[in-house]
Image (cartoon, rainbow, N blue to C red; front, top):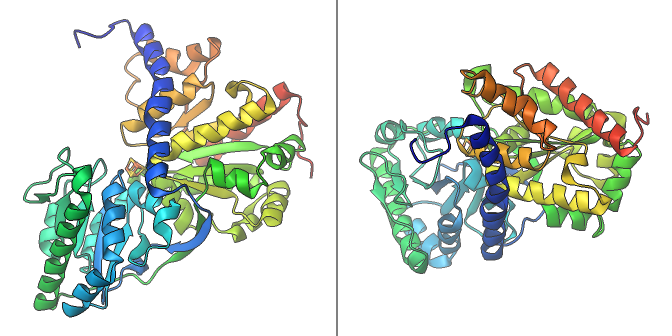
Length: 442
Ligand code: SF4
């Protein structure tokens, strides 16, 4: 471009500097504002996956990254008048289920969890087409990011109504109910009326339905405040566990899923299993959270898969070894937790025994988030290979030079086993620099 710096090193270092802004004017600000409106995360046990679809009910899916409209739809649908309308149309009721990152937030926020019409969480972005193919999704509402462009074909074939709730994303032949905060209740009513109509068509067609009968239990709702509260209002128990070596360090495994490694999420799963076996506590965010949920790693019983140190900590606190912080935008809250830990230790963020990984990254947001992590001094692992390899200078700047400036650095590794080893080595190196025990306590 003509109006930006064309010096690649200056350009990249500026991007890293903007990473700080990405955290404090973007992610963290967004998270906090949403929590003010929708309630802070609350740790609880729930179920997720496609088996939550109920053919007898009107099923609405909320997809995207901005859960305000969806929460208003759930609130309205929870009222007896709308449940009565659903019954009058011949359904057993009406339920709204979350999907992708928006769903992770709906599942985690304390304000949504107990609403009667909230049906739970579906899955990660790769399952959108399968969801519609069940034949019993009546309405699929979506906003920013991660609605696949093939969806209108599936909606036509399997009968779902698609509704964009923001002007920034439109798909061919679908309706838009544009997000206007002052008119959200009215808009939610319109969306519910469209779902009722769609259900009427499903009944009239006597549509064939298949719902895979699978759900998984998961413990979710982790974030800075609920984790600190669960520890007794202080980070000290976690810091003690890190200091005595029961927990070697923390890996935040975040971001999207890709089918490049086979089943979406399979690399994420292998890495997470390898990390907890080495007593490294894992925080998850984004579609990565869905992978951790449907593979059972967010159940307290997953403690059995851990090394002895982390297993003992999880057992004593009754927590899983993978803590789901929710959406990819909840990286803002993970960073917040890390900053609080660094403050409690009296060190700068780059001293923490911490690694950030996006093992199946996809969305452009990952680039901004990687800049945030590098700015805060962390090792950032990404896979697949980012499209920067055409320039040796760019590769060197991102993988070496930034670290010489007291920043973090980027690391690319495709093998799950090697990734686990690199994370563990980095964490042990950071422990050494902090003067913490070098070998496992067990
Ligand atoms: S994690 Fe990635 S793929 Fe999943 S919803 Fe967020 S941006 Fe989309």
